[in-house]
Amino acid sequence: MLDRRSDQAAGLSALKLQPPMRVLPVVCSADGHRWSLELLWRLEQALQQQGLPVAVVEGVHGLGPADARLGHRRVLQRWLRGVPEGSVVLLHAPLEAQAVLLADSTARPLIPLTGAPAALVQAYNATKVLWQVAGLWPVVLALQEAGSGVQPGRLEAAAQSLLQGCERHLGRVPPVWPLGYDSAASGAQMDADESCVLKVLDTALVLEDPENRSHVDDLPERCPPSAADQTIGVSDVHRQRHA
Image 1 (cartoon, rainbow, N blue to C red):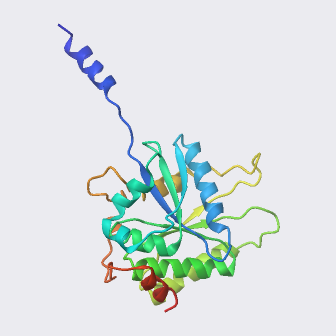
Image 2: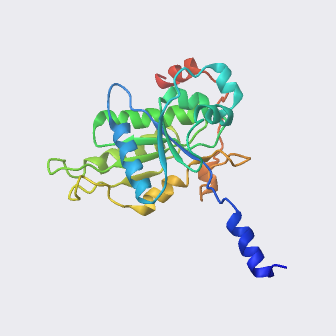
Image 3: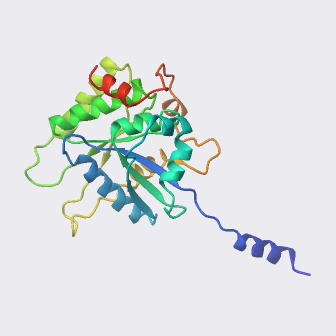
C-alpha cells in the first residue's frame, strides 16, 4: 500500500495544471497609423519577459451579424483554433469588429495613446464607441516614446486631454496606464514595468472560465452600468463613430 503522503504527491504531480487561454483585445489604429502595432510589440516583449507564451492574432476579418449572435466565446474559440493552450492572445482587430463581437462580454479592449494629436482623437473615439455602442469600458495604454527628440510632457498632456474629454462628454474617465520604453537598453528592449504588465494581463478574457468574466480587481470598473444597445451591427458602430 502506498504511503498516504507519497500517494497524494504522485496524484498532484500527475495533474496537468495548464493555465487558461487569455485574450487581450487590442484596438487597431486607423488611417495607416502604426500605434497599435507598437503596442502589440511592447506587450509581446513584456509578456514574454514574464515567461508567458504569447500569440499575436490578426482578426476578426469577415465578422458578420450571425457570428455576433453566436456570442464572443464561440467565435473566439473557433477563431483561435490551433493556438496553443495556455497562451496569452493579443487579438489585433478593428474598432468596429471589437464592438460587435465583444458586446456580450466584459472585455476591456486596449487602446494605444501617444503624444500625436491624431492618436488622442482616435483614443477618445474608440473609448466613446466601445462604451456607448457596446457597453465596454476600455483601458488606454500610454506609450512612452523613445528618442531625444521627443517633446517632454507631450504624452502627459495628451492623456490629460483625453481624461478631460471623457469626463465632459462620457461622464467618466478610462484608466490610463503608462507602458514604458527603455531606449538605453540593448536592442531597444522593453522597460520591465511588471506592475503595468500584470494589470494589463488581469483584464484579459479567460476563455475556459464558464462565466467568461474578466479578472479585474475593481468590480465597479469592470461592470459599470450601461444603457448601450448591445444588439448591434457594424453600421451602428459607424453611425456612433461620427455622431
